[in-house]
Amino acid sequence: MNVSDIMTQKPATIRLNTTLREALELMDQVGCHHLPVLNGDNHVIGIISDRDCRTALNSPYIMRERWQDEELVNHIQVRMIMTPAPIVVAPDARAAEAARLMLQNRISCLPVMRDETLVGIVTRSDILMAFMTSEERAQKRNHVDSLA
Image 1: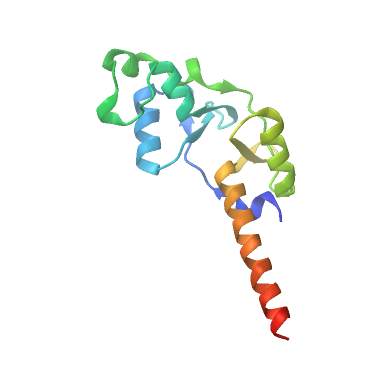
Image 2: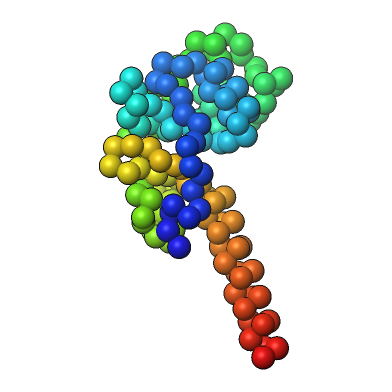
């Protein structure tokens, strides 16, 4: 199984100088926890996570109604709290390699790059869903084999 089989294609992205408020609103709107950060040439130069946002706000909450400091959320820019130069993976890499990279580096997502173009994002949840799906298929095969 390759990364391209389990990744989210065309992930939501955000620009370098966007505010933390806009990042939080986009994550809320899309229902994601990670946003690749793009520069003016559409190159991935960073990644921002909901954890980065909570840390910047010094809050365990990222839901809009719980933002504790409106001034802070409106003035912090993504570039100030993103992780620069994220570890990336190719779409034709094995899913197990993506899992190894995430575990080894203690990260929860990888931008998926074809050359310099962002084609997707793979997260821990994607890896877990792929594992569950493959387990279910194996159980069904075993059940069918036992009937034969």
